[in-house]
Amino acid sequence: MPDLTGTDIALNYRKHVIAQSGVGRELIVKVVSDNDITDAELQAMIDYATLSHGVDGAGDSAFTVGALGTADGSAFVSETTDTVFLRLQGTGDLTVAAMKAAGDTKAGVDASGNTYTVSIEAIFAPAK
Image 1 (cartoon, rainbow, N blue to C red):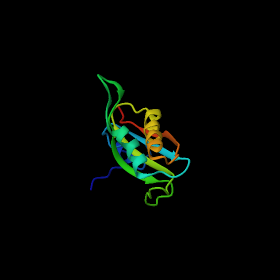
Image 2: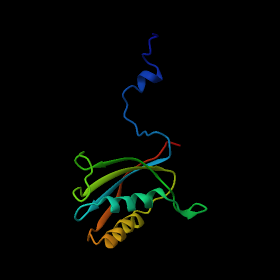
Image 3: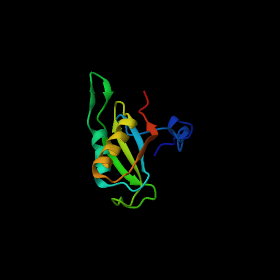
Image 4: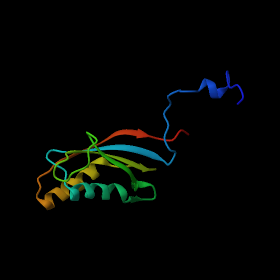
């Protein structure tokens, strides 16, 4: 193997840079219930995030769920887990207030009494 000392490769070895997969923006979305998240309520919020809610570039875009996790790394258990993280991938906008409303509405229909807080915890965007 050739000597790489002093090359750009060697100079950048083990440098920590912001990077992601280049598939568009990745959002880490935190969903918290004041009680316990149900399957149906979580699905209502995921359904909101994965469907487009706009036209001609206005409104929320559809995202893809890349991962789902819990605060402590354990498996999601309906009516037990109260915090979930979603890794969403897409290119547009996401209105967390509307995503929260989808969960709250489903909670009202189900009479679970749950109230949700939804926030974007991190955004990873491809370098331009």
